[in-house]
Image 1 (cartoon, rainbow, N blue to C red):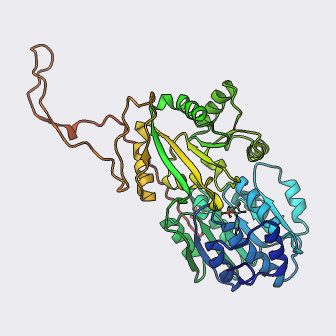
Image 2: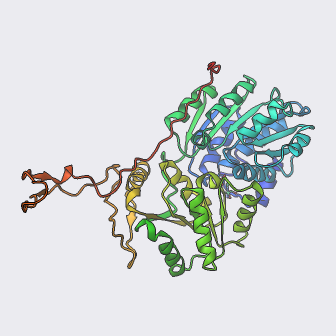
Length: 444
Ligand code: AMP
């Protein structure tokens, strides 16, 4: 199968030739004809499978072939993304695919001045890529009207809900014309997403090109058990031992990112960090430098790093496991993209065992554990498996110590070891359940 047989027009085929896309990926093969036929879509695809071209190519074609010229302060198609970096990246791809078409494209997001964005929108743009918050701001300030909108794309829809955008989405939903095409893309499909899809889509075609909630199989994954306090030391040790050249590292918190970057820079290692507290320009610069291999180690929180496409990234390290298990799939999806191989290493300490278990259950695999000599943890990480159970040791009956007179008398009850509090703190993985409310807001 070729892109030509999918019915794409010549200017798009020319752009794809320049980009050296020879064969459509499975999600593209299914999505392109369906979108061209005007269908709504609900597509689940692994990260790095070519989702962006899957919706952007037919969208560009429809906008070229159909519909009126864009009016002032209007957009004909809207692509919503959860993060600023993803909006930039999607926009860059769309602009590349559109290079031979008479269409205008633009990206708007928060964290930067709104005025240039308002100026740019004056003439209208055919395709607008936006994060939800800034889109609403522009709409409320009358810089953008949506009555000309033909198509709405929700990219990484699950992440938008996880990031707490459900209210923004409900607001945007109310601003849209009823007659439109809606395409919903997501790497994972939770029940909340299915609910959202039920409200926003009209008789959608479901595309599921890979098994649900499975990480790209081109990524070799394993876990190194370690005590929490020794994680930075282990990271540096593994980095030197493995001669890591370019690594994307995920830490749980902003402070965690800063602390690791400081530690690495203190050792003369070329590292930088991105997280939500940093100004957008600083985040983008760090990312660009990492992509250009000017930075060796990029440490990031989930919010800053979702959806990023970094060419040939060989390795992702989870310095901390993510609290939401689905994020594991997104994190390791930064490597092993477009058919390349990759590695994902997770440094796991005892109090992350429930997160590990949730990840194994979600991805339906038991992650291989590799003990690193000299870093064996004092606080053992309990065994886990894909059933989602933290495997308990067989119960042993302990005989209480005979009391020696002084102090409290032990009455000699036989203690079942299952009754004893486990050594590891029981941290339950938090699954945020967003509420998507499309109805009018209740008065408080
Ligand atoms: P995405 O999943 O949209 O982020 O795409 C992942 C990567 O695959 C990007 O670097 C794309 O440029 C690349 N890509 C997408 N479709 C194709 C294709 N048909 N052939 C080759 N590379 C592709």
